[in-house]
Length: 34
Length: 258
Image 1: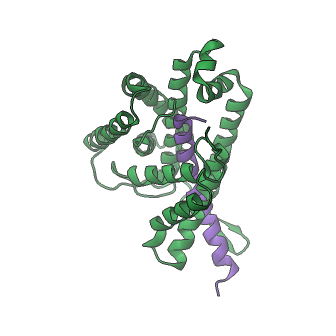
Image 2: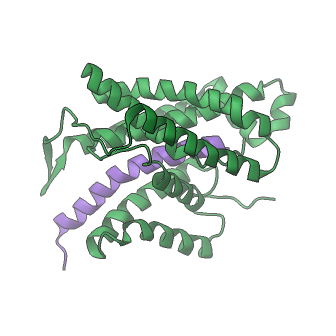
């Protein structure tokens, strides 16, 4: 089994990666139309 | 505007290079340079909208697709000519500093990146909901003819929407480089494809959808890389997209079109 620290790390690192995607996708949404 | 812009990743790349260049020349804090980078991309975006997309607005979608593919080549080759085509990276002033959160040691840069993103999104929300210009932008996007009838300058709104969209890509590019990731002129294509997948997943035109979609993708990629291996990192995003579209074709927050 995987320990909590590993799962937390995946979530936290995912949040950081997600931030870049969120900004990029939000910009794309503005151009495409709200 | 309903513009399909496949060159959006190139705006991320240009934002990354502008930040890196200013940082290397001046040594300013890259989290401050993000504002300059966004401002520069508002200008570049406005020029691209005015010179490239405006003349073909309302014609076939194929025109937009091929125009944006052409822009990809122009921007990548232009960047390679100016900055070279080798992989580069910069070191954030906070590199190596970690913050203990429970049993985790989280890099300070990651925390600043999350806070910066939240601040930008809050600013965007206030702009779109509470300011006259923001409401005019939304009105133009939702009903162009109606907006024209009530006296909104829709062409000005098009430039503004495109410029702000590009500025957000520049912010993403800046956060990319300050986190220590490598970059080169060809870096934009994969993030752009994923951004398209995210807005389809979240529902076209939905900002909450883009936020939830982005978080799902970020966490899923890291989870897949850890549990299944690095080769699944990119594939998992599209597996999620296919599953969501099969179950809910309009995306998570999308609405049925009439």
